[in-house]
Image (cartoon, rainbow, N blue to C red; front, side, top):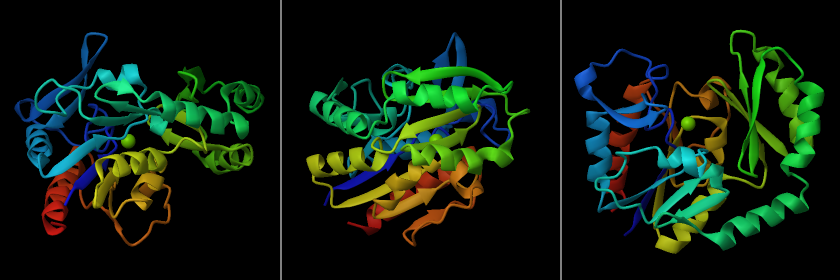
Length: 271
Ligand SMILES: [Mg+2]
């Protein structure tokens, strides 16, 4: 019996200082990302050993919206230095197999984006039309796949997110607000589809998924069991979820520990 643990990284398994939620003693923290010379993301020691101990009974596949460059900065989620057999990045637009992108997968996603006209060139003018606002600090492209704005959260009008969501959904783009990033994601780029591909490839019998944001919901819905972090965007947005998805009791970095403990239990139960 093969169990797949498909999990989001940021604010699910790894946390920045700002997203930890509580003070954690320095000696309990393990740095898992360094950016521009500074420690950027962490796990607790407990989470790291729980994650490592899942193997070899459970196959862990990271499923992140990070681009390849951003993903490759993350260390310490695997014991040893070999790349994992599979990692899902760019929100599912890219699947790495032994550290290298599967070309046919991304070509197929590209074709679907072109067919549905959800390409960045079509999106940018609409963004300019609606987001000529002082709280938009920067507009960033994640390779050729999607766009995110860096926003000033102090000035950001949270009450307008529903209005914007409707406008962009009409032209085939989903939206997600995570920290200072406001994502615009083509509907054909999903974590779930990439996870299904990996599920077939490794012939997994049972899938446990974990996440925190609206971009994780499709992944959790298509898994057999889903774990949703209580502090995340999806819970705050009051998103409706199926019965196989449970919300953590803990918040912040402690939710990460709770998720990994539950994965170990579920994984044992399913055997
Ligand atoms: Mg996340």
